[in-house]
Length: 334
Image (cartoon, rainbow, N blue to C red; front, side):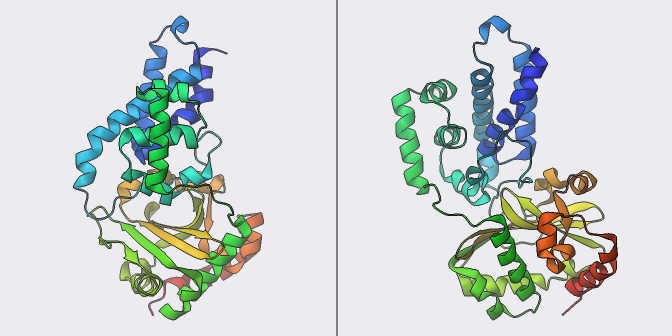
């Protein structure tokens, strides 16, 4: 295989490391480009393992990016959330648990080296020799860093995660309850300790602190659903999977402007992440491609035919009149 072919084969790995490290699609793509340049400018005889070489480059570039972004994130207006990506994005056999928005958000608690060790080990199951070379620490030190990171995150592999059909049924029922405009109807779907996060980046109106607790979350969700902005007739509503979570995506004039992801387990919705900062919607800019790849499909179709949409997300032609009626019902002013 030629050098270009080798790089293209490992490109998903480079992107996967960079995205998990930085939480940014734009930064991850820049790191992929820089990794390729360094790959091209390095002689073959000095590369004993392409995977190890590119993993190390991606990790070190990500560490540099995080250090440069430190001041910017500290002065960010409101909560800083990772950029969402479609579940089927360009990643190497993604470990969905470490692509989870909730975990990526928690990773902000770690320093860059701890974050790198955690990601390389937990997401990509790399051995400590490679991790040691990538972060410039001894293998024993890396083991200690991983233990410290896990303790800080209280991280443990989930024993049980609902299947896709169960999660979609829960979201379907939750959205139907939401449409009635009564907070108390949402309570059965929300866990007691739920947290709702909103990221507007100071560019659009959004809650600047997280909303904790079932009652407060339900009231907040109903109140924000009545926002006149979300009732405009030129909005298009879609269902998608984002970082492994069932999500609602909104476009205005073919531009993604709103994404809400629901993290849930067998007991209900655990946390909700809403991204309103349009700068963080890069992965969803090409609506036509996402539709063609069946990554997004009309939310109205999901609400009307949840089981059919799970099997085939392309609405049959005969459903179009029904979808228009549901669209009107969703956007009508209460």
